[in-house]
Each structure stands twice: as structure tokens, then as C-alpha cells.
Image (cartoon, rainbow, N blue to C red; front, side, top):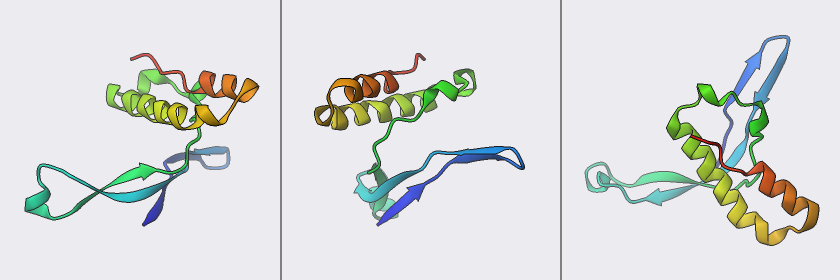
Amino acid sequence: MITSIEPGVYRPGLWGVRIENLALAVPVDTPEHGAFGEMLGFETLTLCPIDTRCLDTTLLRHDEIGWLNDYHATVRTRLLPLVTGEARAWLLARTEPLGV
């Protein structure tokens, strides 16, 4: 099954921001697997950098920064072989890890 993950924030009458990724539900192995049955996780299908220029990183927890850095590492790994020149430079700049 494919689903969309769409966290967002909306200011009524002003503006809104939403990040939208498509994700595939996939079986995952967990220590509790036997006790609770099959568990599912998500494999991200949409690979586009998240614009970090508008983030106030002081409001993010370490695990949230870690998630974003891991996501951007995946975007780099999967997309870099497909782009050259200015597109490659843009992708490298937009997927730089955030400091923790």
C-alpha cells in the first residue's frame, strides 16, 4: 500500500506550509514481531530535499535533526548518480547535513 505523509502548519488567512512524501508500507522485523504479529514501516518513494533554510533548528530535537539528515543522505545517495552540473551542485547544497 502507498500512502502520503503530509505534516504541515497553517496560519488561517495568512499562509501554510506542507511537506508531502509518498511512502510504501513494508514489513519490518521488530523484537515484538512474534507477540504482536506483522509490523509495518515506511519506505520513502518521493525523493526531494526538504528546504531547511526556513527551519528554526533550535526548535528541533536531536532525533528530528537525525531523521532529516538521514532522509537527505538517502536523497543524495539515490539521486546524485542521475544529475550533473548545476543540478548536482544544487542537490549537494540542499542536502547538506544540519549540525546537531
